[in-house]
Every structure is written in structure tokens, then in C-alpha cells.
Length: 279
Ligand SMILES: NC(=O)C1=CN([C@@H]2O[C@H](COP(=O)(O)OP(=O)(O)OC[C@H]3O[C@@H](n4cnc5c(N)ncnc54)[C@H](OP(=O)(O)O)[C@@H]3O)[C@@H](O)[C@H]2O)[C@@H](O)CC1
Ligand SMILES: Nc1ncnc2c1ncn2[C@@H]1O[C@H](COP(=O)(O)OP(=O)(O)O)[C@@H](O)[C@H]1O
Ligand SMILES: [Mg+2]
Image 1 (cartoon, rainbow, N blue to C red):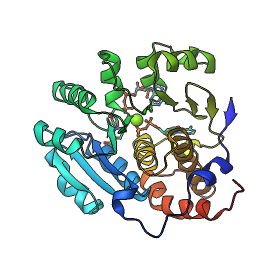
Image 2: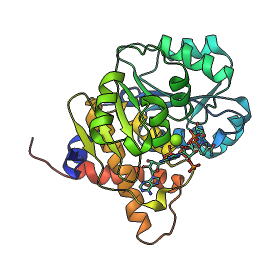
Image 3: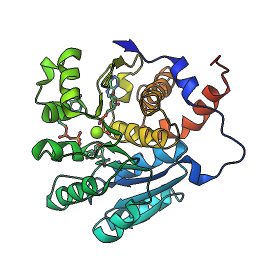
Image 4: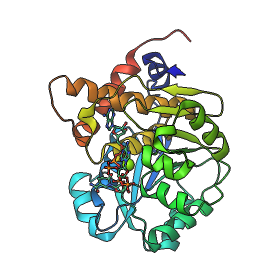
């Protein structure tokens, strides 16, 4: 296992070229947020936007439109029941994040099937939360493109079939290879599995144990993979910064809330982009 280092992050988060526009930084669609879990998709969309995604569209239950706009006017919205419109819009997206607060009812299940079928390379797909539970219940063949799954230990148990107590790096790596996607297995010390390697995140604190913390990570990963070409490095950088920000906040706070992380992402990205590294 290799640790994610600050050097990987500073190599990944590079200064933006002056001659660029929002279309260069990722069109990201987030799909989730049913009537009960609207907060999850709002937190994920907030993290994606503060991570620098150029354009953010949220496909969600209409009951979340007003609260989302009140928190995040930068985001566009679409009713996720309008499947044809959603799938049309999907063709123009660089990154699709599906699952935060999606729920596991029939509508959610059908939506996941439709989105997986419509996603094509070079689009990048982030699968989190309820979408992982649905995928575990009914496996679907995934598109041949960059895909990352972001389960917590119970979601990983459902998806991989490995009981939490048996989730060793070796067992997890075997399961990741079988699944054929990058896996971010979230825990106190999150581990990341690619075909080539196993990484571990050196940061993270129990102050992060708050609902929405993983939704925030999913949004950050989506924001980063929409901007930075190296898929693995973008994921590693998001995981590292998510907990590095939390660790800093936890030095003086008993609990860290997801939105407190999101609002600090641009400052941390700026800091890492300023570090000169020999190439
Ligand atoms: N504000 C909102 O809208 C929010 C909406 N959310 C959305 O809710 C949806 C469901 O997601 P979920 O994670 O809450 O539920 P589920 O998949 O059933 O997992 C929980 C079960 O797993 C177990 N468990 C074992 N180990 C674990 C571990 N390391 N980390 C976590 N759990 C662990 C755990 O054990 P226990 O707590 O009983 O000990 C429990 O039995 C999803 O779409 C998500 O995005 C949330 O983000 C919250 C904020
Ligand atoms: N004790 C802990 N130490 C380090 N990180 C933690 C701890 N508890 C939770 N986290 C982090 O918080 C996030 C929780 O994700 P998840 O369970 O999916 O939350 P949610 O679905 O509520 O958004 C993960 O990134 C996990 O690593
Ligand atoms: Mg989660």
C-alpha cells in the first residue's frame, strides 16, 4: 500500500491557463436526491461546484429545486422523472455522479439502469450512495469508461460480497479487479484500489462522522475528474484534500460539517496549485 502524498496533490492541481472558460473545467451532472434525501445531492453539488466544476447540473426530485437554488445558485436543475430530457442532456456531460440521496425505490432503480446504459467513454462516472446499493442488488454491465465507486464499508460489503471484518487490502483489491472499476473504500483510513495499485489516505478524523460527508467526497471527486486528466491522480487528490481540510478544522472543532469542507476547497486548491514541483 502506498500513501497519498501532498506531492501527488500539488502535481495534479495545476494553475489554470489564462485562455480558458467554464467549458474547459467539466460539465458535471449529479443525479440523486429523492424527497427524503435532498440534502445529499445538495451537498454533493456544492462540493463539485467549490471543487471547480465548470458547469453543474442537478437531476433531482422537484421538491429540492428551491432549497438547492437557495444554497447554490450556480447549479442548474432538471426533474429526474423526465427521463428523455435527462438522457438528452447526459450526452453533453463530461462527468456523471449518480447516487447521493437517490434512494432505492423502483424509480431510482430504473434511473440507474438508464444512466448506466447511456454513459459512454470518454465520460467519467462516479457511483456513490444508494446507486451502490442498487448495483449490489442487481448487477448491471458497466460502460467501458473511467468509473469510480465510493462505498463506505457496508456499501462495499453489499457490492463486493466481502464482510466488513474481512475487508483486507488483498481481498478488496481482488474484488476491485473483478468489478473492473476504481474503488474508494471509505473508512477511518480510506483505501483506494486501481488495477495497478493500492493506496491509503493518511488523513481523516472521527470529527467527519456526519451525514453528508461521503456525499461531499463524491462531489469533490466529480469536480476533480472533470478538470484533471489523470483519473487516478484526480481521485487521490480529492480523497486527500477532503480529509486534510477536515483534519485542519478538527484541530479546533469537535465536529466538522460537510459544508465547512466545501467552502474551504478553493483555498486549499489554490495553495496546492502554487507549489512548484520539478516535473
Ligand atoms: N442529508 C441527507 O440527505 C443524507 C442522505 N444520505 C443518503 O442516504 C442514502 C443511504 O445511505 P446511508 O449510508 O445513510 O445508508 P446505508 O447504505 O443503509 O448504510 C448505513 C448502514 O451501513 C452500516 N455501516 C457499516 N459500516 C459503515 C460505515 N463505515 N459507514 C457508514 N455506515 C456503515 C450502518 O451501520 P450502523 O449505523 O447501524 O452501525 C448502517 O446499517 C444514500 O443515498 C446517502 O447518499 C446520507 O448521506 C446521509 C445524509
Ligand atoms: N472516524 C472517521 N475517520 C475518518 N474519516 C471518517 C470517519 N468517519 C467518517 N469518515 C469519512 O466520512 C465519509 C463518510 O461517508 P459516507 O458514510 O458515505 O457518508 P454519507 O453517505 O452520510 O455522506 C467518508 O469519506 C469517511 O472516510
Ligand atoms: Mg454515502
